[in-house]
Image (cartoon, rainbow, N blue to C red):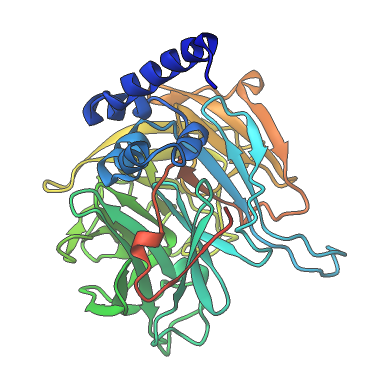
Length: 416
């Protein structure tokens, strides 16, 4: 039998619940946008109204656009050898907006997984027989078959992943490398086509490439609905161009590079450029990076570039007009060479560098230059026994992007 005291307690609770239920979806949307991912994951189980708002695609992308951007450092697996007595599985380190470091300890990453892309909080891993896409925050994983025409010597950097904001589509790209006789080791890979897989569909599609040489080992980035990579191009000041692949129209556009320094008169052959090139992303813009060419390493290598001297970062201002401007010109002392991981190494006016001994640093970027005094270099971590020339870094943010809606012919698993 309910007492007056019980009624006094129940009425405020009922009034509180009724007040919450009267909140419109628009107001609730604005409130939930300001909550962290961890809170939203708990609220998903609160009621149907809240769950519908949180799982709405517009809310997911709106929350993702507000999320702070981190820099993710991937350390590939190191097998046992004469120099390494034990196997070191792949690891991921995350630098937050204050450059504090933490280790990503997700159960969805296996020791042999090799990271090859990061987009809207989704991480893409290369595996021996399949490709895996993971959202670490939701715990969902998507397992996909590789293309039927994949090469015998399959490589992780022949794959990439991107998103088009207008269509809401995510697409995997595979650069199909045809073996060519008569090309020396260390020269660019040749492609006659790319294969595209749209998440949610059931097959890969082949698209003919306009240029046979695509230097995807020098980085591929996804910016504003398009993929960008470096390609060979005769007639430019440096012998390279930037290829743009629109993810909505699936069309190619060749962009001419900025007015870079050409081959100087040296004791090297004239066809040996004195700069090497990489593609990267800074502030959601495509950038072409030039670093002094080291004679001890092949120009078209896939390993991280050694920087001892000046490094220029050219930002693409207008793809339609091939207009670039010099965003950073970075000088590092030749006495202490540093390496830059690929493809992304600049975030929040700081640059990520590391040395031969496995120490990772960050330095402040100021305007078009950078401080080079020892006091400006902050040690972040030491990643031994991992190899300094094989690290990779990507931009990453925590999101609620669901993977179950893109299942199609893929297999979806959840760790939650």
